Amino acid sequence: MAFLEFKNVRIAGISAGVPKKILSNLNPDTNDGFSSEYSPEDFVKTTGVEERRVSDKLCTSDLCYYAAEQLISDLKWNKEEIEALVFVSQTADYILPCTSCILQYRLGLSKDCYATDCTLGCSGWVYGLSQVVSLLLNGTIKKALLLCGDAKKRAAGPRDPLFGAAGTATAVEYQEGAPGFQFHFGTDGSGYDAIITPDGGSRNQVSPKSFELEEIEGKQMHRMQTRMKGMDVFSFGITTPPKSIKRLAEHYGFNYMDSDYLILHQANMKMNNMIAKKLKFPPEKVPSCMLHFGNTSSASIPLTIVTELREKRKSTTKFLCCGFGVGLSWGTVAFEAKDMIISELVEVEEPTEKSQWV
Image (cartoon, rainbow, N blue to C red; front, side, top):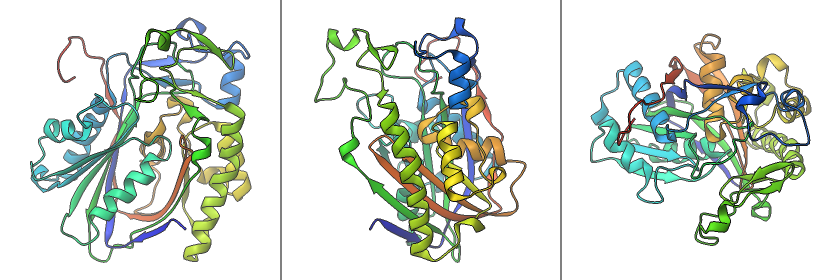
């Protein structure tokens, strides 16, 4: 059973960066990725995604960079004291090297810095958090950054109206006596093709055929774009997360209803409403940023905290967070945040000139 518990570590702060450009799903002139099976109005009603942030130039690492700079400034952290950086994304800058290494350099962190990438998607923030927390467990490393998000894709093509771009930063620090974190994880690789980008890896290398458009569930897509089996993903989404949340609470002996907020991966509004209903969570305790930002993959949980709870949360807040999706993979975490800094949302301008870094 994949249960983990860590003490003496806390989240010091969370920030998020998004492109300044807004794309409306109700304006058909700006969208070329809608399915022929439904209208823009029906899409918004079903998914809850009315608009999202997009960019043709900003990479995930750019958005994470600006989010991290803002958070480091708000926390008044000395960059020399940040000794670990974990980058979670499915849209790395390059096939190699690791984007975490590039971000270590861009952020001006010490060369004595542990840096690694993780390629998970929807469950990525919870998985990444467990990795960072475990690094700080014995106090040898005292401060670390978890950078999560997805943005500019590997190849141009019709935009999927469900997905938006975002990058986030979570600052984690060692603190003696901090209550810590409780995790539950799960994986079902038999569903690997439920959400998949078929080409571009070493199994199916890029070829001219990779860019030929074909109809997938009413959408024109090529094989370098992510596709999903909608009904399979929906069925997984409404059954597995509630079970994970209940198993975590049962294993560690707490009432999940005592949580101040349930933060779900922002997959689909209909799906998330059904999860909350199954758990009997009141709607006011299940915030969502899907309306204005769409599905932002591993960024969605911290982005929801930044955009929906910055002015609302108490000095001490009990969080219950669940990420689930591509893999198939899921992870749930319960933690108490005391005096956690939540930075103001960073809106990043589209670059006007080509440069190595935005």
